[in-house]
Amino acid sequence: MKVLLVGGGGREHALAWKFKQDDPAAELIAAPGNPGIAEYARCVPIAATDIDALVALANHERPALTVIGPEAPLALGLVDRLRAAGHPAFGPTRSAAEIESSKVFAKQLMADAGVPTARAERHTDAAAAKRAVRDFGTPVVIKASGLAAGKGVIIADSTADADAAVDAMLSQRVFGTAGAEILVEEFMQGEEVSLLFLTDGEQWLPLVPAQDHKRLLDGDQGPNTGGMGAYAPVYPLVVTSGTERSSAHAPGNTWAEWHSLVGLAGDQIIAPVLDAMRRMGRRFSGALYAGLMVTTDGLKVVEFNCRLGDPETEAILPLTRYPLLPLMDAVARGGRLESGEWIGHLHPAHAVSTVVAAAGYPGTPRTGDVIGLPEAPPGVHVFHAGTARNGAGELVTAAGRVLAVTAVAPDLASAQHASASYAAAVSFPGKQFRTDIAWRELARSARAS
Image 1 (cartoon, rainbow, N blue to C red):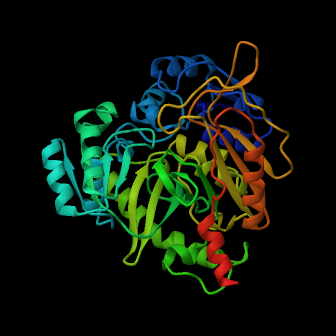
Image 2 (cartoon, rainbow, N blue to C red; image 1 turned 60 degrees about the vertical axis):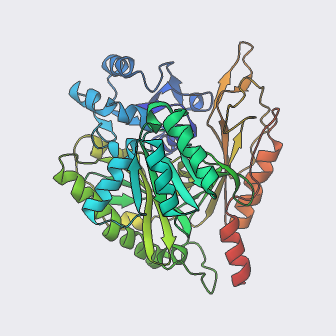
């Protein structure tokens, strides 16, 4: 099977690795790919946003399946163009991808579908937005409506910080057109969980629940980033009740409760949203990411993404036993998924993925620094997120998030230790990484014991 994989980050490296696990004989082509993906695929230097060139590549290569990783080409209509040219493509159409490319659209969609989420107001005028800040009180969340590479959300603890965020987006246009329209949103108290689903637009199949760590520094301090790491699985009682569990759950023995978690989210959130999208003529097929907040009032939606999350994918796929390629191929060809037993394919292990970021991230990351990578021990996967080769053939930093180091182990503490230890052994000037990915779960387990 020939597969074209669009993208060049850590998520796409994890997908390439998983596809080769699913089908060792698969022929993979990646555009643009990266040095890590090149271990599994033939990389073609075409940007993920160069829609015309990607369609031309598909016309030339005639892949059996194209899988689009990042949100930008989906928002630009790559799936529409590929399907019009006769190429099966996994991902939502441009109109369906608006669930991520416009936070204003997503809020209205949730209101129409009766899906629980934070109260928010849409604004394009800075003065009106600042009045809304005072009405909401602090802390308050300021969100750029458009795509901002995971950096368009500011949690402001003071009115001054909120005003500065409003000015940055609406007046200074730090996010360009993505911030021309913003949401002033109620701050939700609770803990976040990431649920990722494959869907044909009606049926949906879940991946293992995960938790992303957005803040730059240990203890969830510092500025928001695109994600500094993730762990999986997140155990169900944390999600279904929002309360601490009284005893630790052993991996592999929580199938019924995990099923209950996904069922709750599916009934309250995923099914109503998919139904509303179909009624609007925007049937959503592909990968749907639901970022949820566990509050004292139940589950509430923080955001939707129109693709697999990053860095959650790097933690989830090494725990995913079921082959993804046949499912993605079925969806791309307009087929139907069968709900049911796949939910039970929970790997009896834990995964922790630590992001190693470049100097200057999340502001202006420095690129071109030579990277030293030690040999990875068993159970550690090093997914390239922002790497390149320089003229001398050396591996160098090429983006803000450079590597996602995923360790798989029988228990969470061992996975965290192995992931952080390898991240510490990576060498390049000014590297940044967190040492405490999964700290909340480990703290709960310590209290329970």
